[in-house]
Amino acid sequence: MNAIRKVGMLGLGKMGAPMARHLIAKGYNVTGYDPAGDARRAAAGVSIVDSPREVTKGSDLVIVVVGFDHEVEADLARLSLPLGGTVKEAITALKIRLGYGLPHGAE
Image 1 (cartoon, rainbow, N blue to C red):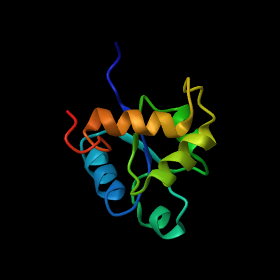
Image 2: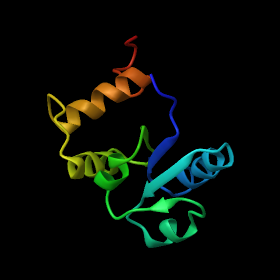
Image 3: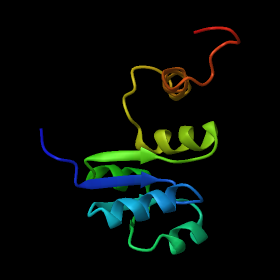
């Protein structure tokens, strides 16, 4: 397995931009996308592209850093990934894996 050197960031706002800066400081090449012009302009050192799909093309790893489910759904839908289910099902599975979205009292 090759070492990860190229990291993609979907979301360059309050959390994504600082994460990208830390990765750049550690020597990673970071490519990013954010629909907000202010976030794109403020992401110093990040190679900005025009779509989530472009982020994935040259990345060894893609990190999604957005605040709301609908933003993740929009980014994943733009990628047209074959998820084996719906985007909503993929997000629900991810939330459960991370410990979010579980029914009260479920473990």
